Image (tube, rainbow, N blue to C red):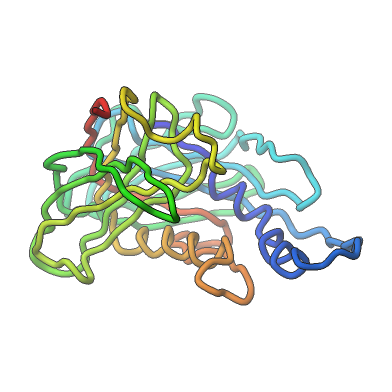
Length: 276
């Protein structure tokens, strides 16, 4: 599974949503003096129950007026420790990317990430891998939304009894990963079957990018712990200025030590289909 620096991109430009909302209705040209901000490390770390997916991406934020490329930070020391068990050091494989291909997680166990940056700063995070749930089926339905018909991918799966189960759905269409953040928890569906419709509104109404018959769809299904659900939820609601937030803010993170980002120990299941 490829790690992409969504967090770095969103947090670097976090003020843009607020500025657009304030001035979108004004016709007068206003020059904004955007002050420089202290650069922060961004850690995006994942561990799954599938070999080859233990990866950490280390980058830094940039000022608003800088370009949208985020070179990886080399020279860090990165470890993952199973609580009560052994420690694995992740090896650098390219600038800013650290991997441990043989490391796999186990449901019910907690893991501690430790990142020592080249500057000596230390960042830690703890994540517990949840019980694994498998998708039953994925399929497409025709939906009428915002005055137009569209095809939408559906995911059906059970939810174990007991609150606290959380899920993330990552959608690929014809091999292209969609950027929409799709998450759900069981606050209103505990112990019942869940149907999640993966509406995708990140394509700016480009008909060529809309789901259509003959497209190949892959869904990666992650069972995530509640702290990671809260991270993605707050990233959607706060960092992007959604849910009528007055001021965009950094998402709620399980990362300690001053870095932004997250560490997710999750289970992984994938299904592929051709849209009829």
